[in-house]
Amino acid sequence: MVSPDEALEMLEKTSRTFSIPIGRLPAGLQEAVASAYLCMRALDEIEDHPHLNARTKVRLLRAASQVLQAQTEEAHFAGDAFAKIFNARHALPEVSLRLAEWACYAPEAIAPRIWDATAAMAERMASWIARGWKIQNEADLDGYTFAVAGTVGILLCDIWAWFDGMQMHRSHAIQFGRGLQAVNMLRNRSEDLARGVDFFPVGWTEAHMTQYALHNLSHAERYATLLPPGPFASFIQLPLALAYATLDALAAGETKLSRSAVIQLVQRIG
Image (cartoon, rainbow, N blue to C red; front, side, top):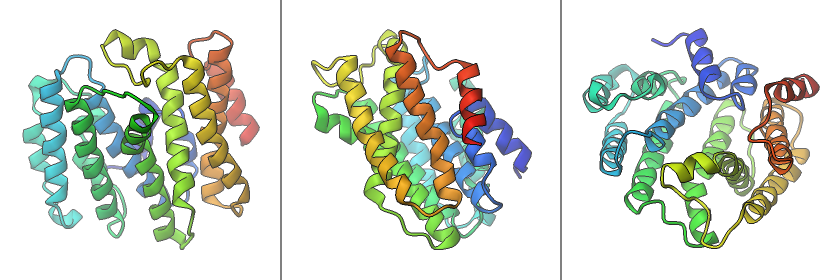
């Protein structure tokens, strides 16, 4: 069984964008959001693994999706099935190897919704890998960013609705995810190209992708200003601020946002 300290430690290892706001959430909500994030991160690490070929990635992701779809409750979760899928020869990172633990970290009442979203994401990732991440136009980009990020925004809305009954505009949640994903694509552009993956539509430059990111982030930000004070409004402030700051850093010729800049943002937002 995963302890809160273990989950937060893994969050800190895998994401400076989300580890801080997740750590500030109230009990119950914190476990649900941490479970969701770590499950999705486990899949990300498979999709981006530098030493696995496409066929292996597709097989692993689809197998994980099928196992998740076969579950009913945490008490009888088939964790052993993941151990068989993620065997030692794949050299997967810890966050991926412990996918079953993250899946069972959420409160029992909301866990199946997280499994559903994780299973869907795994299948969609596998489909994009199978087609070689071929993104021809903005519609393709919208499809990919929905698959790997927009749906996370929708899931967060569902988690909050379960936690305190708050209903949010899911379309803006999709834009929140798309905007953050576009910033990641810009930040990781060189690394992605080095491994033979190009997430930019044909003919797009960094300026086009920056505009795409700003368009989606601005819609999410405007909606965020209308939210009542509470855990969700506080939760999305830091990722949005970090995304904008990262775009500024990239425009200034930096490769990423410096650690000192991150610390200053965290202190300013509180």
